[in-house]
Image 1: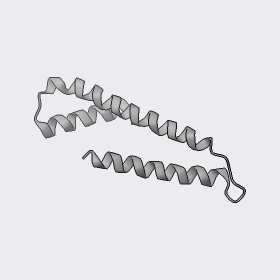
Image 2 (image 1 turned 180 degrees about the vertical axis):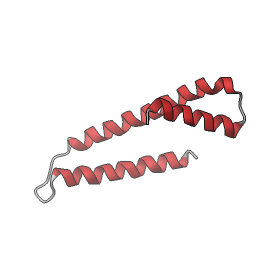
Image 3 (image 1 turned 45 degrees about the vertical axis):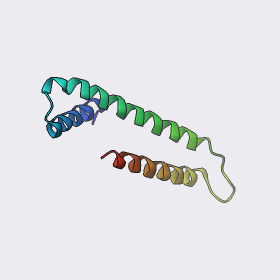
Length: 84
């Protein structure tokens, strides 16, 4: 699913829940789309940071990356959940 479609769907949900005017849906959609893109950029930056980690002899790079991504994913989910 594209970011634009996710943003449009989220905007429709926001309008439905708030009872706002429909003509504001484009602005809401753009705001949501911008927020989603920001989250994706931050997640990508986090992934880039993980890739740059040096390996220790007792743990290979794949396991380090996997562990670091799980931590970042949990933090992202916690942050997004707090916005509810």
